[in-house]
Image (cartoon, rainbow, N blue to C red; front, top):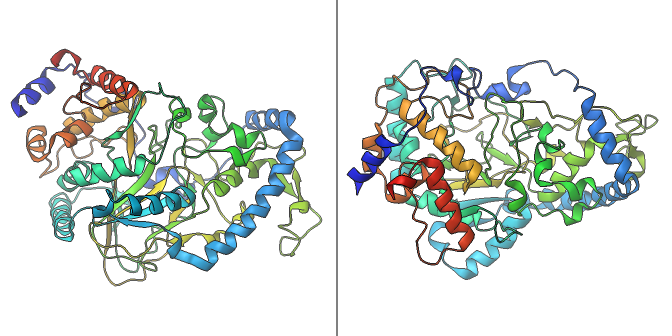
Length: 499
């Protein structure tokens, strides 16, 4: 079977290019700071007037409803902030990998996950295996001292996508099982939607190795998956994802509905590191012991309330007569629809992620509602909903290295399958993944796995997740739409003629 798939892979016509700069998917050379003005220090120019037009059209249709919904939202946020302050990291739901089939544990976990949008899955791989991957990674980095990262000296976030450690982790059956489990909490309002959350694709992302005392990687609160696109008709508007919020009905917004996100374009500006795929969850696998205060992930666990707030915030402005230090400043009656309407989208910049802060988003009380995830151990997996505000602690005050592999959970969709086809090309050549800054990448790195060796090291599900083997649309028990999705993916990936 292995030789069959190798022959199939070699015989598939995959467009090849001698330079990534000629590719439609090519991005500018850079690093993780390329999509964060706060890290790169780049100047943020005012948005063009067309964004004022976008906002004005929304206001003209729903002015009264927006004002009323804003008042309700601020009231709901105030209650939720008190709950977050009281619980801290305990607000993050947890489940063990060996409990994923326990319906009692699953039910309790499900309700908390859907409310908070973040979770820790314990023991996805053994501590021994995770530490082995860490050692393998350290050898790979040492063998390739030319590796780039951010900061440029003593990197914390490496421009690595195809190290043996990353390939083995992404394709591990327990990782794929965990991703499928987490994505099962999404649902589709359309029975005909071409999507499979039970067949995760392997999305190549970076990794973080944060040294004790580090303050360079002080990435503040932000949201991935685009920025200005959330308000644009040709972005998230293609699926009307946030229409209920823009109509003054934020309570009707369902962040777990998947079919509306299938037509979304989240990278209208081809940003160097801006994500073009549908990632249901951002996520990472820990390869070390790390807890609060040790440079770990921070999450805002207010779910759809926080999402509604950062989407509605651009439509409102405070009274100029009330000082920002006044106790009256945050009161709903002090905030009214912006007039005249400006082009500002508070923290959203084309080709970048959207960044948030206490000045632009005062009602979120980010200083108190960004909570660190609980202490994690090697082999634990942390995941958070794609709309969730997140960041990292400003300083690593611990005594040991904090290492994680970024491994988001992505369903199989038509758009994701097309991306996977291009990503497969990147894997074969050792180039950076298509969503990320361009360049020669790891094409000449010592220790990079060949496709043949990688396939030997993977089980079938791992090969399929990387686009190296076809799916079986005839598997028993599949819903018709999922069966059609698998067949369509085989066609996109070039496997159709080999089945």
